[in-house]
Image 1 (cartoon, rainbow, N blue to C red):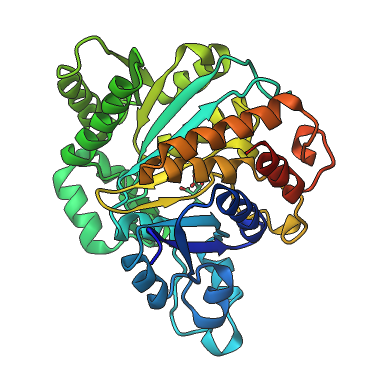
Image 2 (image 1 turned 135 degrees about the vertical axis):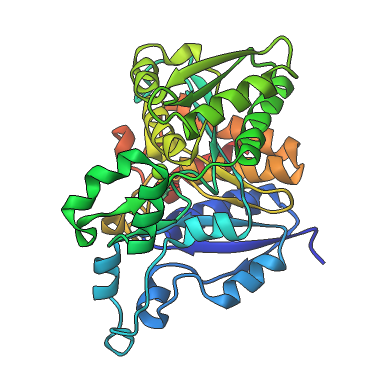
Length: 372
Ligand code: IPM
Ligand code: MG
């Protein structure tokens, strides 16, 4: 029996292209693993009315971790319109399967490194090395939303908050409400992960990013919790910033930031911005980590227009494989893989279109394999 069982989920669009690249490097590294294919994505939504079938959840329960390509997400009405005729009108509602998986498997920590590999012409600067800890199961992604606003919800809010009164005149059918639910436990966990990481890798600061001057309750909870947690980590400074200013500073002085920690939505925004500083989504890897299970996925989406063309940059996916190897404890392999990727970038001979080259995804992966 293989040492590891890994769920293999290409998902939508270019997910398949980049997962083929992942397989090339994993086979070269000869990781002792069995890969179990699992269905997920738009095709299963259209034909079965379920983007995340039960059989896939079962496979996840029987594996050590999952490797995931990309997913297509569309707003509610558009999703309904694409259902097979037989499934329409049954009240099926599309939810992003990746967001569901994060919650279902309690993958509370989304770890997103943005590191500049020298030689990448898309780098803002070559000395950027930022790691983002994004809370992954609550906050603005809690999924507790209403439209139209139910009378009971309106009444309860009005009875408990004076600011609600001014909305009544618009009519409940014209009011949409999305909630940002944050728990002390959720805040504490993500901040702790960030500090543990800083301590382990010798980083000197952790920056907690929110907007406590406006989002006084949720943002306030995050900042106060961060201050508490920080007390346990002498020698590591806690920096506190607002999300808007932090976006500006990441463009102005990205090299001074080491570890950023944020609520789900702010982390989502920060991680796209940070990714662009080091070459864009073609270089942005990510890990969704829980207590016992983890799911590894590049930050990029499914780019449907490039699907099957083996055109997109597989570096994000290959670095995602590196994160998986680290999590599995195969740190030697992870290190060799990262070195090979860094060498290919530095040599600058084999590049996909986003980096100004004309090589295919597969050629980039093969160049990494050759260095290994
Ligand atoms: C990400 C993506 C997802 C998110 C989408 C695809 C649901 O943007 O992983 O950052 O919003 O979390
Ligand atoms: Mg995102």
